[in-house]
Image (cartoon, rainbow, N blue to C red; front, side):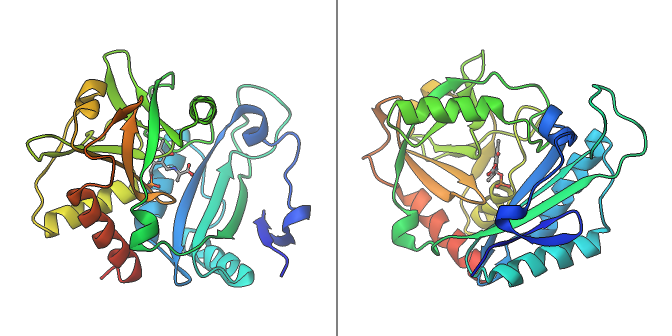
Length: 284
Ligand code: PDD
């Protein structure tokens, strides 16, 4: 079955789906995006994702290309046309097409691209597989709260991770504090069983998965703290994991070559994986 992408009002075969050479997303990374998980054909946490999209657009003064309601319909149509049961949807809105100029004209029609892809449904077993990360200097700008397509620092850090033979990288700022993963939020459990993730501010993205995990942790009676933690704290942690719409809850079992806990997903991480997978199947 051919994959179908949505580009500016049209549903096109994936191979023919393209944007203009003077699209400002292409030339200036002048745009925003979202990645939303799909389980059993349904979008996971669609409303919080659209709220975050609304915020990102507002911060960059880009108007919605279509109404929020129409947006939801298009997302579902892309899922339907591609018959995605499990996977994710990628959507990108850029400021639009204009002759190259750093400043932008007032009235531009934003570009909208949406496509979906299928992945295997996560099981407790597959989700519990841990991975190693390295630390990388956080060289990003001070508006990481906006989900822009300007992702070069993450691209370089991810590449450094591949070259080091590990799966991912965690960003560390000049104070030695871990901000977040290249495309995920970072969590640790301290030796005195404190579950920690960094508080939301302009230096990290407010992950939708992060928010859901905080709610699930609360319901499960797990105590947590939203505060900064250092690379040293992370190396001494008994558990560590990342969260994102694609990685879900992913155990981190090694940081810069230092084994975390016993080198496997720890008990709190396992509990959160279970709760999160259940939540994906039945968000109520
Ligand atoms: N990335 N932090 C960053 C820098 C991210 O890029 C992401 C998501 C997250 C987690 O956000 P959420 O839980 O809403 O997915 C945190 C997506 C998955 C990506 O770029 O592919």
